Length: 240
Length: 183
Image 1 (cartoon, rainbow over the protein chains, first blue to last red):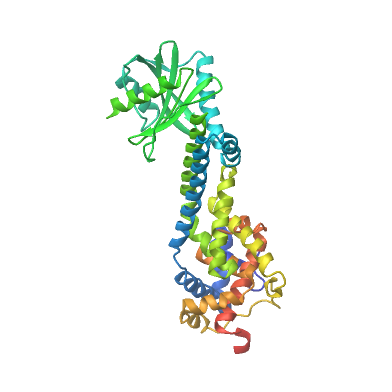
Image 2: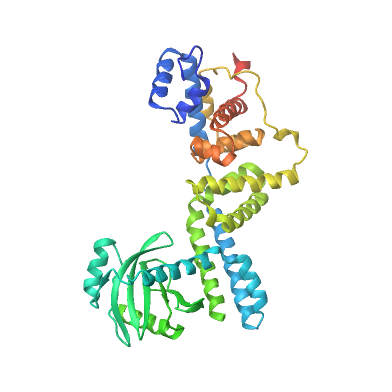
């Protein structure tokens, strides 16, 4: 910055905008103490700022415009799904290709990858127990606010728990076994509204995203879609 | 297959709601910037919608620090596309260069500004070139940092500073007259 041989023009603005280093600010202040012209200029720009801030309009209609856009995106998607019911699968698939986010596939892949990794590493659980209370305590010690698992039953045995990371957030994972299949249930607190479990098959994995009573879930397994539905029903039942 | 389609539909639902959460805090700023840049309300609404749609398509790839700066830079790009269509030959939109530095105004300048109202301000803003209007609105109304403004405009911080100082001086002149003529 140097010392000001004349008036600190640019620096005066940066000073007004609090963009100067402490050192720079002190230099400007030293100059201001000496220079009435710069003090007046600063005063003028401060008045200008007050005027502009008082004239700042609130814009509630901006939010409506946003919701209109996202609603129309969702509506288009639903129409595509409806079309698929009439056998226009090709059209739906095309729209899906255009609209469906890498997110959809990306998350399904991520869910499957987390599951496969846990199986392959031979560490399908970090703590083995069939006691939901003990698992809940173990989880909440590692992940504050973790969703505790629910007890097994109806052919599903609770085997243990892990902490995983999904879509960039830590999730509590409960592991159940049905016959010879392990099922990972990732859960995290969520404000989204309830969503029915509708399992789908992706490669060798059955996956399912749903939510119920303030908890969002991903489930993944090599068990069938009916198994995942049954487990979701059991969890819902135990939670209410 | 049906459930796979349903699954992807649910993902779009999720994604669009996530986008709502992402964009909502900056929606009002986006509209104000659109209004600053295109001047007529119907165009501003079009720009806003178009910007949201574009942002929605790309927000998965967003990895910067400031969602606001990113969103506002989209609003700006969309506005300019419209500008080029509507005002292709308007010479008034070239960046004005000021001859010399602004003189220190009369001491009454601040008081004169205090007496101005929003209507006078908007009229004066409308007389400024777009590049001056937007930098003023971003700084004084949206309170963006120089770094954010530099990101939105795609220019170095030094340019933000010089443009801002020229824009302020020009706006003051528009509002209270040329200080030099009063000296």
